[in-house]
Image (tube, rainbow, N blue to C red; front, side, top):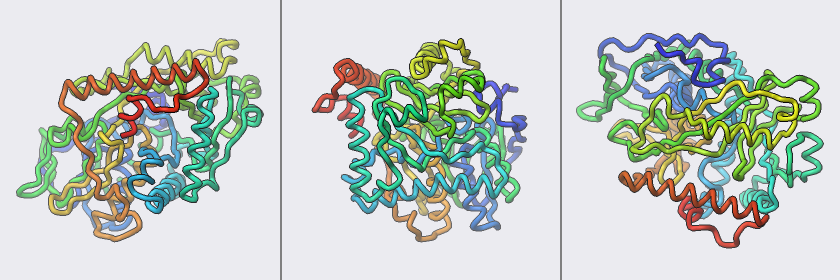
Length: 462
């Protein structure tokens, strides 16, 4: 049996018994069958069973609850929708963009509320987030984002913070300015996923682990197929995020990409006194040495690198995340952000990664097709902690045939185009990634961003 504690620092320190639940043994019937016991599947099950306790809900999980991105991400619970805000306004209008932003804010608060009501110790701390500019060319970008938020009337929860002001709170090197967002929380993601799994079980949901879904059918009746028995249901929920790329029916709908993190040993109190960061805000910053950061409850710095691997033919293996070159880059970047780490000889104790799902147009799908009985929430592009909660709430309302402010959002009817066939998809994404990295290096060297977006940026924003 796998040692699941070795797949991330978060899983190792989740405080939960990671022994797998029993797998399915023979075919069964249910009202709703869910593929995946990560955030997407668990939130969908939670809101369904809370609204209708009579439902027979079954979740099938290949590994254990929280094994995938839900147990390996940066612990970022932030009201940031994966699809660019400017694109939301241009494609769907200001009213819709505002509604989505408001629902993302609600998701951040909802996660904290569920942790409290269900007794889940996920280290939830809503102290806001800083989007930090560490190069002069990045400063206009945070001002532009605030202007866009103002355009939809959502600027009240945001504030531009000057470099000197931020350094009074958090001593990060080369700070130029930052955009503070009050609607951000730090979480222990694996503890959240594991706690949510226990919560839905107490409410009557059945979770089968060590049960790989090999496919699904919609006729003559929807069913999830496994080698040890099938689950027949009125509704199937495909909630495997990046792992949906392994299913032939939807494989080209989602592209798996890796994300990687390192974490320090616990820092001594005297070092924290010099660094600051007492409120444990979550932090991000773009650039070649950019990253996403978390101050853990036990006094460590978790640093995620903005470098990734997208596997050829979307092949996901257990060792795909073991990218030592990226881990080394993350350690170097963390020491560059906080030079005191090098000065004090602080070591890094863990390094891990995971896969997240990217749709071709970067727009998440949170859709239920009543004719086929297929529902799915997917395509978070690395912003899944809060977005998956929104997806779960949206699917629950749609499956229960309720017309709400959620069911009229565009994700409820959205269907992303397929990714290109291999090798075009793989080759194209390599070119775009390299183009984006080259443009960022040039901007850092010159201190100015080009007036015209690069070809790679135009393709990425398309």
